[in-house]
Length: 440
Image (tube, rainbow, N blue to C red; front, side, top):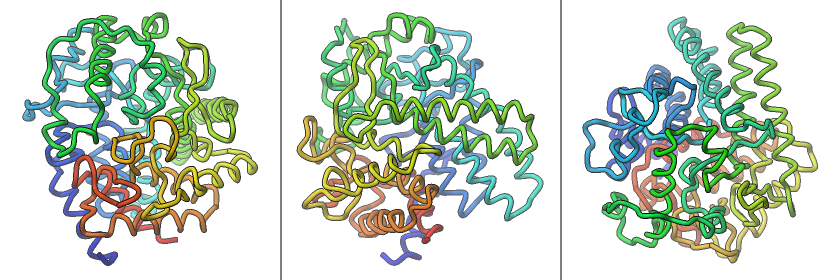
């Protein structure tokens, strides 16, 4: 497809998945609102419809918990054929912190939202409409509360690294990042269930295994029984990981929110607070590097998780990464461990390094390439002034996705380009729109 055709096709996907105030991630597999999906969708929509882009974030933050957390799923009451649904989470019954309506999950996802808000503000400065600026100003304190929740409840020891309680919080559900921590989980009795995701894929190997799913649900039960209390989770929850990818995104998100706050004339103390969060988090992520890759830390095991996944490229996302770290990380991202792997259809970054433990070219986060993750790396390259490398990564991803058979897939097999998972994925269409809007 040519650029204009690709843009029209991406817009058609977003319109098809639009439910009025928010966008479902895919036509069938994901019928609810997911947190970081909506952030990327807002980034894409900012290039074509600012009003609708803002509404995407506004609808998500209406489900914000009283402690500031943004749940990873906001449930669509009209979509009942989904598991695990609201009753399995039981958030409103488990804690007064959760809203009674709409129903939500009890987990979180990476905080891309302020990056989206900053992108929207940049477009508003060009459009200069008072209504849009007022709506951004109304969202800002909600995002500040979200960042304060992350900086305190998810990092109570002020280490600079955010903790997650479940692989679903990382956004990289069945990544090899979690294989070793999962071996140490003592899974109790899990109530019978029927998976929703396997109804919508031809090959079950593309999705997490049954053993992984049992562990996912066991962790949810533990968190629900603990009333989704952060202090309790840090004390005794068996899956507690300091997540470098989420932390690096948080560092950039704090810088983005500080930019928004400064543009809105917010108090200097808030700007300094956000800047301090960014600095503390950046330093902590840099200190996790081993062999050039940033590594998650398994708190319960007391050790780093030695795997080779795209999360290890997290230093590239840091707003103030030193030049030598940037250079080394770019070399890794473009080299044979990632985008330069021999045999790839296009030089795009895969989710896991080929040939390393856990790699599987067709299985979810174990090998396929995810356009949304490639967008994050491209965005970081541009921000660091590495425009040639950014253009190359953009061109490779657009080459992969402009083939009619790609169908805006959730993820793709890196050697053949075969679309995998769900097709007509909203955030894939959204990042295509943003790539097309930024050719340089």
